Length: 445
Image (cartoon, rainbow, N blue to C red):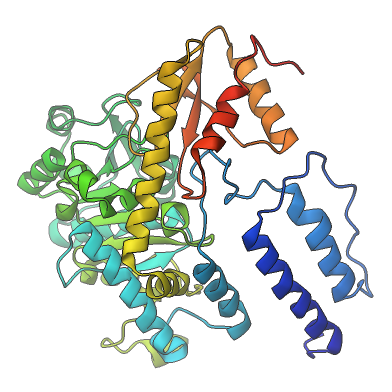
């Protein structure tokens, strides 16, 4: 089955053509689900029949995140250059854990990491690594924080102090670590310095692993008071981690940088290129102000790893909770090299402009109402007279028809509607189309 046969070459040609067509026109979501898929058999059905199932049955059943009206969660719209590089990685069979095996692929990833460090405002010594997602990035940062605390002060700290609007992965990471989270502030508002001070005053400093702040909360887009938080952490000698998985892309926009003031003082930062930096899934980055701490916390040593344990090597496997890894930073590098950084600034600004348009349209429509000041590219609003059930039914109908993917959320205990703009191909016409579907008094089943 490893022989590269004629039918494999034929399918690859079809795949290349399909990929080109797919990039020009996103797959229209299919409203109905597929019948039962063929099972696994002893003989198999062959690559051509399998490709047909993948192309015609499996893939059309999803709502692609690069659809211009995918406005739920935090999607992603990869550039053609990033997609091409990602496809090449699979064909090249690159192991991205060590310089010994990956060669100059590591240098390309290092260049992409350096760009992200520059975006954050980190000094030259800073470094990081690409991982599968924000969950692993946040876990790796917190493991590094605990390692630093244990080495410096001894004991075993067990408390992570986090903004009340922290991503769910923070609680998951602390659970894995055997720690607990103390949430500070209000879930739907940015964390303030005085709130953090009050929480830390009530704790034994030796128990605290780190403070986690948001630079673009997933639900609202809000940014915590990073400068205040940074000053508090510095005075108390506490590791500051900033989760900028979604919002960090807005650092590229000159008019937004002031909102992130203080992020450059964080000990670690998470940014996900597969969200608002136009890279295929899965690709997140964890950045460290002092990467030697992360390397000491994560480097795995064993007799079978002696060939790659050279302390002078820059092995990506050493900076996070992983060993085997895909060279996820190569698509980031390829797209940056191909398109230049100005194109990234323009793309993020486009998303912000469309989000601003959506907010203004909602404010102008009598039966709609903004529920909180929009932050970054997230807009939360309500449809007057609708219940949580109405919101859910409306969302389901839009998805089933292939019109859009817009999911309800909760803000201050109320079911509301949420739009998140991270695709520069989303237009004001797309916004108008979605808002027009809210004209009826109530959605029907």
